[in-house]
Image 1 (cartoon, rainbow, N blue to C red):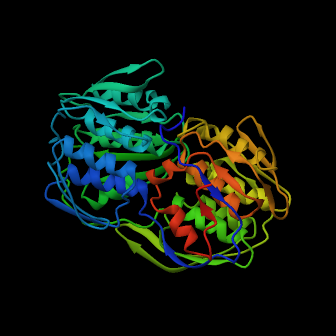
Image 2 (spheres, helix red, strand yellow):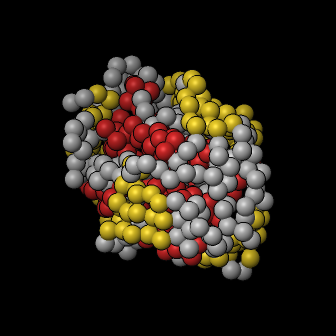
Length: 448
């Protein structure tokens, strides 16, 4: 199913290396959470560096609909006056979450703990994505859900009048499911307990502490156990959103693949549960280093320097998947240019992203002259050890990361690569083409 107004984009090898310093949009995960926590805190939360892509703007609109005061005060600067834990009000209309699975799933957790009724929908891509993975554990609070077949949007939720704390072992590694359970637990008396067998991104735990909640994390034989003491008074706290490491991945990989390039991406979030791609690229031999490391708002940040490198294939272990789940498509592009074979293991979770991202990534490679195959939940890429052939038109399936990966591939290919629809890039990386074009002469990214 395509966007009603597709915007194809064409990428060709630049005539000069990529060079310069740049910032990437604010971290999407942290941006969503900053708006949500601000809405259930007491007082006014000042947010700077907020990602102003479509996904996050949907969250801002939803928090307004639930009774918080949410105002933009400048570029990336927002102010949220909250209603306190348990204080959200029933929305007058349907909540449209657009393309954002994170916003939809986390918000279901937040609503579950409030005695309100809400209806939620999204775009065609989001309406295909599974919500049962959150509605099942959230039902334990006493919340009720009515969904389409397969647990899909649109859905209706009636939150619990007297929510119960959740005790839940995650069947799959998912920061979204974990976060939904913790957000539901805010309104419940007692302790909410979530167990994850593989550590997933912990922005929710960090931000809960930043706003004054009591959260403990313990590594046990059962897995990582997260406990939240319910019904805290969350107090407004300023949030400086770092650059999104998932967005930084695209200019970084482009710099590694375009000969002679050197790019510095400033103020990138370096949470160790998000940096699996950088670890993997270094294993492939990438000239990648971090400067100016610091802590901001409870999160580690720094500037990443990436220089052109001839990469080598590696095996990426399955336990690393949660820390780089959004970066596999662009890693596959790096693997396509590397010497030897790269095997990425344990990618089942990619099948339920904005698209079946595993199949879409394999198709992206095959359509541009790269031999690749899927074996079970593994993606195997046979690198060229040099320039990628290119020349294909990539079906993006309304998936912003497939679109950006295709365009990075075009910068490192012998023949231009076309993304059939780049409109969805705005959900996470507004201004992507202009920023990439600004790193070199000419306009290697342009409408065909």
